[in-house]
Image (cartoon, rainbow, N blue to C red; front, side):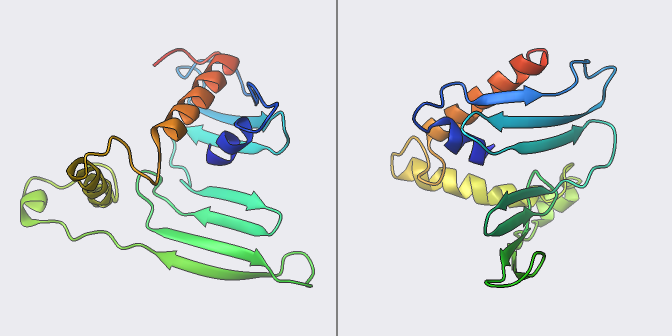
Length: 168
């Protein structure tokens, strides 16, 4: 969504999302393949499902390489950055891997049964960021502003409207 968000904001790119997806409802089509095409160029291919076990990876592809954010999507801990090797043929990349460890679960969390979704302990980082903002009297984080969040919601709403997905 973020690269599309950036395209949406470019001059002359009003309503920049064109979605292509089956228009069947979730009850008859538990997974979907989708293409989002900003009118300014580029493309995002999305697949999501409700009943199957999916890969839960996000890949962002650019002219100089790609970034793979590894699952689970609700709180990833591993990212790989593949940069094209300068002057080399196609497929030759230099890979850098990054790991972001989860905080240790407390005894209280473990005794209560833990979390339902994998890596949910990582949401402690988000809670800490919110507390830092509250302590400073800020109403949004510098890393993800309200303007950015609203732009993403507009993109999602436009996408849902175009594919006929009922309101949530």
